[in-house]
Length: 122
Image 1: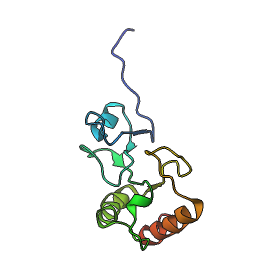
Image 2: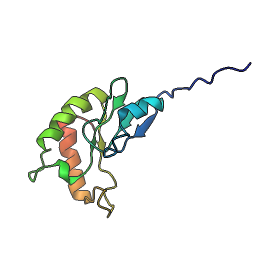
Image 3: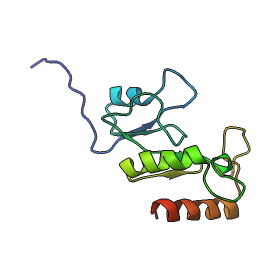
Image 4: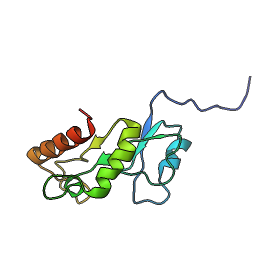
């Protein structure tokens, strides 16, 4: 029997939305029948209603010199981290490219410890 194909939504399927591309936001994830998305940032771009946005602590620029999160990143993790119950940490910390975290192991561990204590994500 021929009929219209119906997309199957996975139990928990995600996709990354590149933050600096205006066409690529959380609404695209809905079209892909995903249940979660992230964009390398601590806040979503576009509408994230109906889909789980998972914030990302990308690298050292998310932190002040004393090791605390920047104000807006802290607030975003409170808002979006609490909703998703997940936080992603550090994009390619050992990478050399400008669009990677480029953060040493000791500093990443110290920063992640701070995030885990503030947001109980361990």
